[in-house]
Amino acid sequence: MNALRTPREVPGSAPGRGPATVRLDPTPVRPRGARRGRLSRRLQGVVLSLFGPIVLLGAWEALSRTATIDPRFWPAPSSLVATARDLVVEDGLLHDVRLSLVRVLGGFALGAIPGVALGLAMGLSWPVRALIMPLASTIYALPKIALLPLVIIALGLGEASKLAIVAISIFFLVVLNTMGGVLAIDRSYRDVARNLGASRLEVFVTVALPGALPAIFTGLRLALGFALTVIVGTEFLSSRDGGIGDLIWQSYQTLAIQKMFVGLFATAILGWALTAALDLVERLVIPWRQVD
Amino acid sequence: MAALAPVRPQTPLPARPVAPAAPVATPRALAGGQIVATGLGRRFEVADGWVDAIRDVDLAVAPGEFCVLVGPSGCGKTTLLRILAGLDRPTSGTLDLAGPAGGPPRNAMVFQGRSVFPWLTVRANVEYGLKLRGVGRRERRAVSDRLLETVGLAGFARTYPHQLSGGMRQRVAIARALAVDPDILLMDEPFGALDEQTRYLLQDELLRIWESTGKTVVFITHSIDEAITLADTIVVMGARPGTVKATIPVPFSRPRGLAQVRSDPASARIFEQVWGLLRDEVRDARAARGPVVLR
Ligand SMILES: Nc1ncnc2c1ncn2[C@@H]1O[C@H](COP(=O)(O)OP(=O)(O)O)[C@@H](O)[C@H]1O
Ligand SMILES: [Mg+2]
Image 1 (cartoon, each protein chain N blue to C red):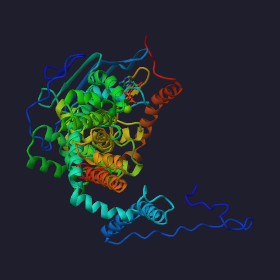
Image 2: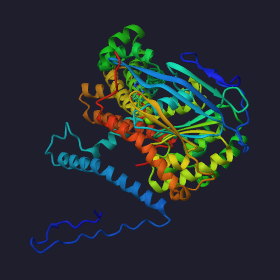
Image 3: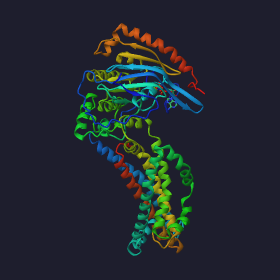
Image 4: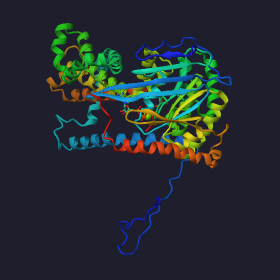
């Protein structure tokens, strides 16, 4: 049969008048300035992604100003700008952000680097997998914040315990994603390497690692979100040590609602920035990944 | 047979040849390796017993011969090729392999399905085996330039495979195998997933390459036409367990053109013969519920 078929009915056409035809107009290919085409596509994406937050903030602003919602608890976003400025200038908001950032990145590195290594080993070797898997899947399911008291007993109240809890929280997540990535690599890639004379180490470096990279990055992106959640929670619980979580919790305790909201926004922006940075790294590290 | 390097079942894999012998193929008259398999078998352990993927396979491939294996799917063609490639060990029988200058031959396999590394550019894929052998950058480059030219991908050296068509990717896989200048080229349905026209083009290309290098080729296909076009010898395999049913010489002269083979009445006769052998096998294989499990 031919690929072009005539539908029996077209919406809007009266029945019984015989088959209508459908015409598909061509989509013109953008001329040489394809870069421009892609850029404007990206711009469109940015505009679309900003749409949600702007509508939300706008509605919030309007509802708060008209006192439809209680402005004491829901201060208008515009009124937060001055508070944010004061916090930056007088209360060291940026210092808190930096403290949290260092804890997230430090704990992230401490958990992710060995996590990737172990995940690769588990993916390549079934004895390692059999040895670690039961432990990994059990701990993976445990809410990591429940381990905080234990970590504090082991490492004290300082920075070490905060780095450790972040590292522990993300470790098995990264391990399992990496292992899954290795296991999903088509067997023939490994056969090609072996057939052309690759040693075990060479198979590891030239096949397992690059083949698992997309899955590794999926794991890292999830891990980053986890790390942020855990550090804010930890800072809630061990206040007086600074950090964004501390700021939010202290503000809540003293009913400094405006400050609390600024802390929330700072957390959101931090999370967004970290994710964007990871996306950038991914694009640099996996140039072969298909775009779009 | 003194020159043959024997491969006995269940012996440790021979150490990989360390000498980074010159990988650049200067066309030689007979550069091929020799294969002699006697009573070769491979038994797999499965959940409730064993399966003989191949049993009692006798196969002799002369240096420079183009040998094509045909048979119903599941008859052990891939298993046999993996054993020839050193990727798997036989569980019975013996396999003797010899390089053109004595000693173990170098082989390279072109795999069924996806095998071009998506994370390497076309050039890096082609140079992969040479890099493992520690061949220097300039020399690698010379080889990849020449082979990309040969397979018609000269303009795609810096491209990643996902930007290529299936046929182009298969050419990369072939170029990658040729780059290490193997004595034996093992090809597992290399053109199986391609459209007919692309297939014809690549068949012609492969014949040209083979005729100019004199390598030994063992080539798997499910297309009888393809077998007749390419082969010196067609080895027909049967299933359950996989064995060699017949070895049929293909007498057409070389160099061979596709059109020429098609118009020769002798090809119809060979087609009849091969199909006659395969018909029952294919029917049996279709009727089978699963592999024959030995308990
Ligand atoms: N690793 C394995 N474990 C168990 N059975 C296998 C394995 N590899 C192949 N087989 C079995 O061996 C038979 C031959 O497989 P294969 O060599 O892939 O056939 P072909 O390539 O001719 O289609 C099949 O029945 C298959 O199920
Ligand atoms: Mg097969």
